[in-house]
Image (cartoon, rainbow, N blue to C red; front, top):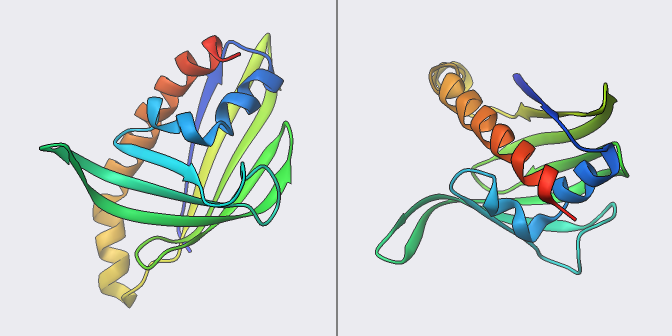
Length: 150
């Protein structure tokens, strides 16, 4: 299960950063080409479910990959882990928030279940830099979003 971790510093208290990070309905404001919505309630506990659609918008439509997730760890304001349960994206993701200097550090780790044996692993190796760049860009946008979040 290959891992990918990206970090960002945020000039805001960890509690505010946590609220911004787990404001699922607003994740599309900082996460590239993605909309997220809870499937049940507000998805603020273990067992909560989320649905994300990542893709391109064209002619008023968003075409992309559906990523369903179930929250498997919920430790405010420090850690949220989800299990990707969709047909395409499988594995786990973890968001963690730690106090850092006068603000916080956010880490996003993806542990991907790569299908397809060696061919799948070769494909993951080829797209990994683009995935990392997308996550890094999203986290830079998140840092601005979190500073202004209530």
